[in-house]
Length: 120
Image 1 (cartoon, rainbow, N blue to C red):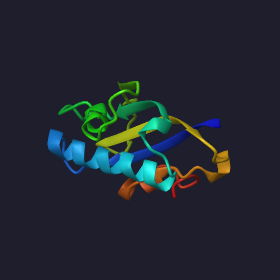
Image 2: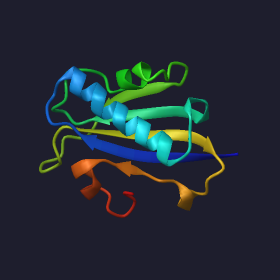
Image 3: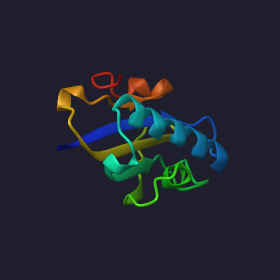
Image 4: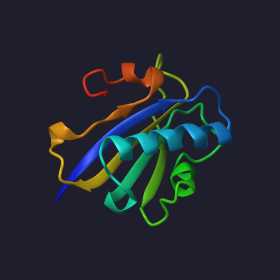
């Protein structure tokens, strides 16, 4: 079984804890489903949020999905002029039989423009 990294992102409509939970939960669910993964396949997840998000920790969405024994960490994304606002990104390390080319990175909604080279 190989260790792979899966990327993803979602843009929030507003900085509100419930909305963040819903959107980040949808992102995590899509990453798991598109890559045929479950919580036991997760090694760790890094979350970053743009500096304009303050309402909650993105990792709280993972805990609410039942991902309770996987190491999670949150960090602030760089504050770059002109960057897309209200974005949560993930970098999940997983165990999977998929090749690197077989991994499906998930960029929901407007965030697909961030990584046109790998967005599915």
